[in-house]
Length: 297
Image (cartoon, rainbow, N blue to C red; front, side, top):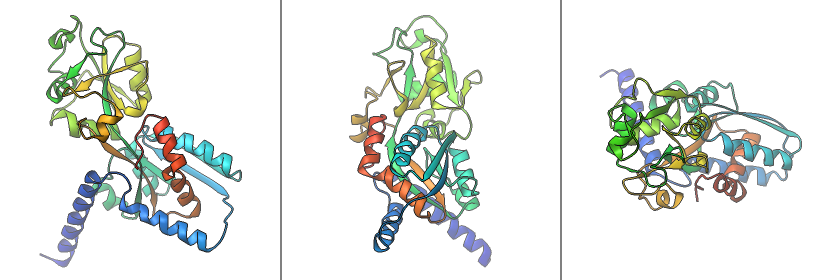
């Protein structure tokens, strides 16, 4: 094996190990030590007034957390302007890795292929989350729908096409899914689809919010969203007889869980570090919890 091929092999092994560690680690991730190091540097240098602008983009799952934290952060630092946009996890990785935005967001782990394209990305965990299957509150199965993961895959792949096949009314199931590049879609595929493709006639929506709106306005629709988007306009199904609530994610009974990330191109500068630190702080994590997500500690 040539030296070049050997280096490529080592790189892939390291990336695979890193990705596995990301999936198996909850709460504070080792990357977060870099934030602490920056805090210590700032502390040694005395009080620093924050000024400048930050651009943040990526996952629509992380979007509400980033937006609310940005609003409160700007109230505390009047000379700072923070703009927040969506676009999906894939766009967040690309935008941050190419330097188009200061902070990217993803609701899934960074892929090995993305790290090869953007090797200087540094990731920070900001919340935990899960994904729920949702139906309309007026669906006769609302409040009692309990699906196995196999049934979930059969519904979203188009093998089960009528609600009466799972004890509901005689009506076609109208399936919605997310666009390619969505972190929520990729997590749902990994945990729930069992290698199957989505139904060819599934409606495609570009955000968690639009998935929720599609179900809220259609008695016979079904979709999947981040826990942070569950409200009284939709009803979350149980999976494997486990209710889709935060407590069951934390105790390991609910079968889908994930880490939400922010990341920078290289080590964050003081302003980027201060914002990520704020999201990870007790105040920021209270916002995470208030929005229906799961704090990292």
